[in-house]
Amino acid sequence: MASCQQPVRFAVSWHRLMNTAHANGVEIAYSAAGEGETVLLVGGSGMDQGVWDFSFKPALVQAGYRVVTYDSRGGGGSSAPEPPYSIEDLALDAVGLVEQVSDGPCHVVGLSLGGFVAEEICWRRPDLVRSVVLVASGGRTTAYMRAKMQAEERLFAAGPVPVDYDLVDALSVFLPAKVLQDDDKTVEQWAQLIGATDGPGRIGQGAAARAWLLDDGRVERWPNMRVPALFVAFEHDIQFPPSRVKEAAEEWPQASFVEIPGVAHGNGVFDAASQIGEAIVGFLPLMR
Image (cartoon, rainbow, N blue to C red; front, side, top):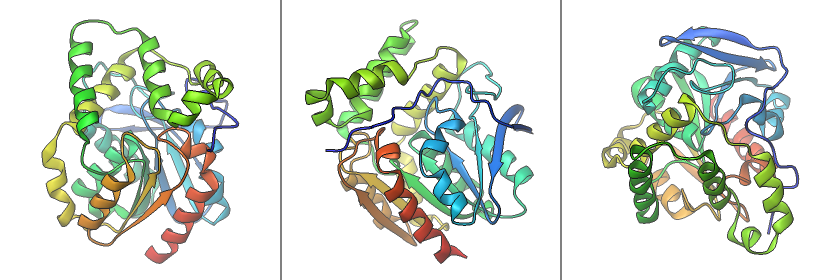
């Protein structure tokens, strides 16, 4: 069973050369590395763009792509307007960024919440997307996740929710059950280093994710998607189990599917970075 050897703190201030784009009424902090066709990486909820350095971003740069990363509204160096946010808001932010930083259609890779955003971009602006990769994303909402999202809607509507809730919730999703059961050291490292932040971004991004997961209508769009796609699933992902991800890939025209063994929703993007990078690099040349 894989366990994350280098937990990454999500709530950090990364010292890097960043640019700012004005898009959809907000300021978006972004950075670019490498040369070649543009690949836009769209991160998960609360994810600072610097986290990509610990995952498959280096593999994409090495493979000859120009990789653009950014902080979603409400996080990192980007604007944090008052909630609520929607996936449409986040997608239009990304569209505005792409129109400014890419000479033409680009490849889009979305992780978790970023996959929701990437999917929305494919639906609204397929002209801007050469191909899309959905990592730990895509698929019908399971009964478990539906019950969880409905409970969280009531919880957050009732009043302020301690950020400690986010930490415990993240641990239960990020790590495989075997690690939670038997590997206290890894769990404690993640508990110390994940970091949980409060503010408009936390509330806004969370509300956007819940609304998306509870929207049954989104799956009706899959057969009409015109963007070639790669779906990447993690064996122990309780949010997007491989069976649901594969089902989505089968309904999406020009889509392929790959399952990464031994990892869960959160630790997979680090512990399986080389496997994910290999899958993406193998997929992207087919789109040229």
